Length: 387
Image (cartoon, rainbow, N blue to C red; front, top):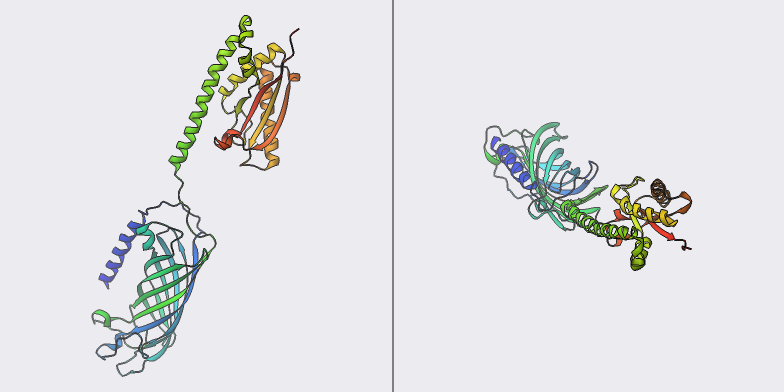
């Protein structure tokens, strides 16, 4: 008995260690995910301690030792490789209660086992939600009772299940198992000091049945955070490079604007500067400017507008991937108002500033992350002609 326990414990620890090295990482699901129930019918055969020395035929299909039975179980997968279940099986059986019992004795019984399930397919091949066949060894312990003789006995059990995927919710299975009892459960006598197979009552069975997945089933792969961060960083670097180029160009143009004598020579460049919208970015669901550096270019437009009595349009945006249309409409309006107040603080007359709200959009998100649609733009719209 001690040797059997040691072998089972060693097998459990060894296979569980493989489970921690699944080839595909998956995200942890909630406690209520990946529950299942199973129901099936089996053909069970009993080999009892009473048979010792009786010379009974060993075939599991002999009428005196076998009969049909039924089983039901409920369980949960805690990881693609490891799960547990509580299984009840039994109802009918035939057992040998004495060496003279050549035809077997009809016996009603049940066995309730708690079992650890190890999905060998996921352990050795990695998780694949589309895999049709999964091989699942299991082991456990429990309690059995014969209603016919009113006896109880503890048991150890091992087995293997072949699980076939039929759909997202349903599967079919074929299971082979062995229950080894630590006391008399057939109304005969306990094997006592005998060795090997004849020292205990044994039940083997072959079972077919159906599995039904309760609620959410399956596992999500862990996103590649490094790849996502690298993509975002690349997009941010590209945007920063454009902003630096624009800042350098704006600095050059501001210098030219401070030199009235050469304005005519750079009229086209100035026109491009004052008509190109300047963006100010915001964080998700926020109306405060995310980075004060964004206001550098706004300050240049403000100076031009103030010096030339020009009209300014501030347009607010929100990204369409988050929030409701009504929420995004209000958010884009508040962002426009925020930038308008910044312009007023820079000396632009409030009467020269108009605002517009575009709500949730996906404009920059085509080439850049959706974060960049969370912005407001500032643009010179009208410059009075000098008399």
